[in-house]
Length: 201
Image (cartoon, rainbow, N blue to C red):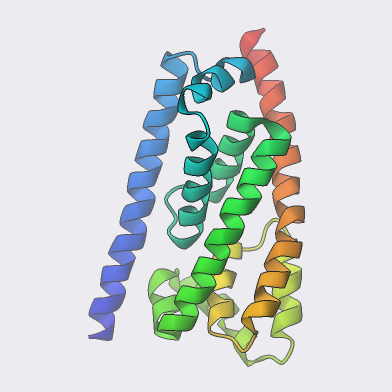
């Protein structure tokens, strides 16, 4: 029964990732053909049609992206920067990712370690599951969240089945996420601006 449940979750996770990737590719193709991505101004003009729904939709997408891998995490950060600029993109990324991280934690705390195993890759789970047995989990988790290369989404699930309190988890997420997101945002913004110059040149 457990294997069947795990198989169902694997189908859901892998299926959502595949569908999300296909939709992302189609969106990029459409954006290029419609000349939406030719400049920051063109993209901003396109987004103005949606008014305040645009950032709301984006933040919901980023929150869901943490819980289910709709698309590679870096693509969300790139989308935020392209769509809203460095500062607003950072803010919307931060809000959406923090909400998603808290949701992942609460899901894991509600449904337990079997749920975490079902929604995560076996290799990733085996690599980090040992953290649960160590007394310094909170410190290791906090350091990992500060680092922009750690598997943050999975670690939020793992934290949900650890002994860390909800308050400490939220504090670490709220304080730790800005650095990682800023690193992505600033780095990607420089790359994007350079590519736009080359593209328009």
